[in-house]
Image 1: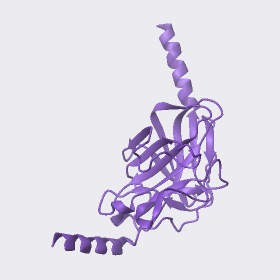
Image 2 (image 1 turned 45 degrees about the horizontal axis):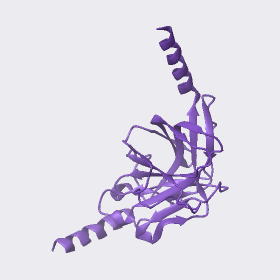
Image 3 (image 1 turned 135 degrees about the vertical axis):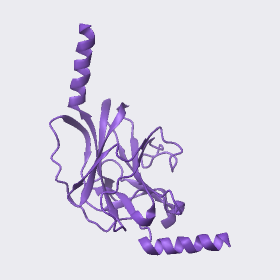
Image 4 (image 1 turned 60 degrees about the vertical axis):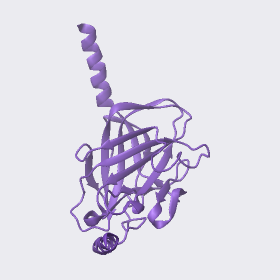
Length: 234
């Protein structure tokens, strides 16, 4: 009887929000963001396409959890203070944007040059579980631009290929889906996706990259240097 009830609830819920899909139907295609004089952008891939499913559903749909990861690599040691990325929503009639937790995972390459290490977070070398309200999110053209300042600076070694995965956390019903916006042309390897519910094996190569920037904020550097001078005085 419990099993029958679960099936009925699942069917009703899916019919209310529509079935999960791998990609949004929006075609963002651009950003109005002009950058800031207070930051150095060390890696930049701007939005040019649609949203790719990258979300954790903490409800009745674990088989529809999805992730997108994209790679980057520096020629010299870089220290990052902030990350900026572009996302989009679909399959929902809720007011946007939806303020929810965000998961960010950092992986090394699996050795092939084409994918992160093992899927679904078991081999991430760093992770950040960001509560709702701890990052900014604003409309940017047809997409939504998010920014997050890492609690501690993150340093990346030269000549090492890293992969980032970013996804939002909220219930499919009634909020629908969220995804990372595509970016072209492709830098290094194309982004990769996993989506068990639609048969997309972790990690399956896509044909585009994902839109994000890795940043060092000059203002933060100024604050650090000023604090060092104060310590010297005393």
